Amino acid sequence: MATRKVLLTVVGHVDHGKTSLLDKIRRTAVTAGEAGAITQAIGVSIIPLETIKKICGKLLDALKMKITVPGLLAIDTPGHAAFTSLRKRGGSLADIAILVVDINEGFKPQTIESIEILRANRVPFIIAANKVDLINGWVKDENKLLLANINSMDYKLQGEFEKKMYELVAQAAEHGFPAERFDRVEDYTKQIAIVPVSAHNGQGIPELLMVLTGLAQKFLEKKLQVDDEGNCKGTILEVKEEKGLGTTLDAIIYNGKLKVNDTLIIGAIDNPIVVKVRALLEPAELAEMREKKSKFKNVKEVTAATGVKISAPGLDTAVAGMPLRSTSNSSDIEKLKQEVQTEVGEVVINNEEDYSGVMIKADTIGGLEALRNLLEEKEIPISSASLGELSKKDLSKLESLKEKDEFTGVLLGFNIKTSSELEELAKLKGLTLINNEVIYKTIEEYERFVDKLKKDIEMRELANLVRPCKFAVLKGYTFRQSNPAIVGVEIEIGRIKSGDPIMRNDGVKISAVKSMQEGKDSVTLAEQGKQVAMAMGGVTIGRQIEEGDFLYTDIPETDFKKLKELKKHLSKMEIEVMKEVAEIKRKNNAVWGVG
Image (cartoon, rainbow, N blue to C red; front, side, top):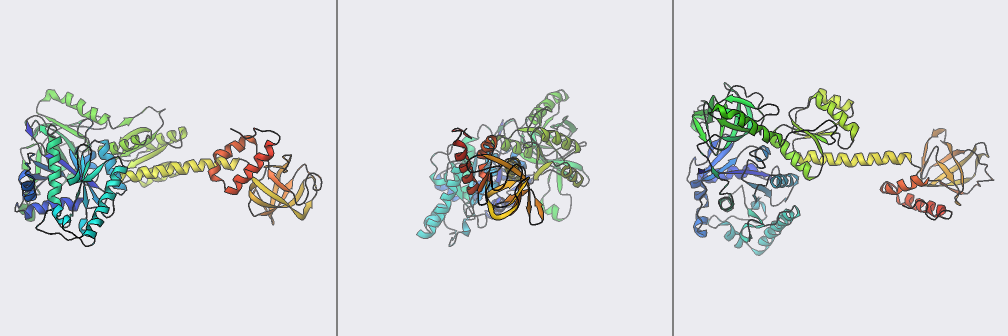
């Protein structure tokens, strides 16, 4: 058994400085006199123990701290691919994460999304409060460590800095994570440490690495114990076409050893892929790259934890995020095939046809897992979860789902490819496809869709009900006394439509709207403020109705109860008319419209 390096991922909102932070750690390592100390493997930057010691330097002496972990492996893959990829059952590829937040902007939607995914994968993390150098008046003293530097600043600047820090503390608490500035944390198992940093000038980088490695060696010791001689376990980060090599895999090996000629077993949607490793490749030295020689050098074997490019025939159908295993013993293949497919089966869902729920698709298994986790947290039912591009089969399945339930008959995609032909077909069939490069945007858009659909359904219901309306019979505008009576009316409050029943203010039903005319045009609806000529059957002007009377729509009791449920769509004046109608009706029936 051996202790492997800590797998680290850096996450956060776009433009908050994730890449700059890793770049600064690399450059700091070089300026600390360790030229080339951070090596680039495929998909990861290897930061050895010596480099961390060099960067932390004085800080370690001041705290009398001894670092025992063999170093860090910072996963370079952009986006969610790295820390949402499968690793082993119930776990994430990353051991620990840095959540980068711009101290001047605070939490943004992708920050929240990152926190949710870290929570779902149970990944411990620390917050790097980046861009402190942009706080007005901030000056970095090269001779001072971070806390001493902060304490030497003027009172007003310290106040401004503390205000921004505690806004972050409050935002973290809002999302269920008690947090505190790293030097004030009382219990690292209960509080998230916030380290103020500047990816621009390097301030706080030693403190960030110290807190990170301190946490890792205290809480991840068992997790870092690996078998460095046995068969490998790993995850595909990216599937790439390389000139002269064909389809290759960029993978992270987090346990065991992978050798050329080993059999590789890779998880897949239907049947696992079984191939023979033809070559293992690592990035060549920088000098060679400048000479435009091969970008890679061949190695015979790699040991956890590291990143490596794998070349083998038959990788065309491999998908990013899938688990992989190796063996040199053919009798192990069946067992390993089962192992990887069990992992895949925990993410991919194929429910029976009669099951309702949204359809979800993503380009990687990690993305699919993240989307599924976040939907499950919001208790949104899922009927199927699959990988790859949108297909005609998906659309026909979506059609039958929509027939069952308009709300969940929707396809939610994370970063999936959709041909314009299928997009057009979906439009023609009236199907809803929501696809985005950012998971939270897909979910937000779906929530907006649900809200709009609820409103549309309610408005459709409302359109079929008799709405509250009070209108006046105008004096001097009787065009016909009876059979049908035609009279000029003005809509005082609400709206009335053809066919609506009409009552007097004593509750007696007298007629219904036969037709209406505005000027020379026939209309089926008259709204507040409009004057129309209204035809009413079964009444005579001067007998049941007098000019100058106020009349009401005679709202049926069932419509009245439904209107109460939908009253958020009614105006205050319409609600007042509803109350008037109820009072009139209750003179004859005390419980009319109640309940």
